[in-house]
Length: 122
View (cartoon, rainbow, N blue to C red):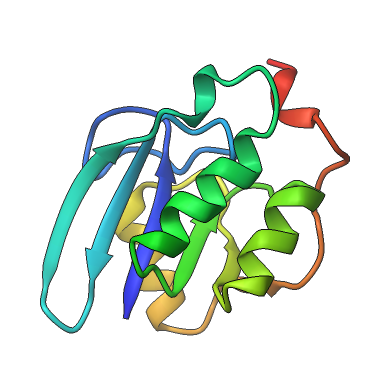
């Protein structure tokens, strides 16, 4: 399974970011291939539509599941349309979040967990 974890820093075992669309870094890991890379997203610099741009970018990368603290309504719509599953991961590092996902301990979400434009607030 190809998983994207929103990160707070350019660190493969960094802390999961609470803001999906405004996350600058993502750990993209393929559990079938045992590969993982931190990649940078251009979306945080956008004045609007960061969640949509991030969701589309991850869909284009073939991601099947995303882990973040929160998801806005526009990002959720794009992720759902792409068939990407969304999971809420609290304040934990990326490896712990992935292990929690594998163990079935992360909550899958099917709707926004924050109101529109909440990622702009710091």
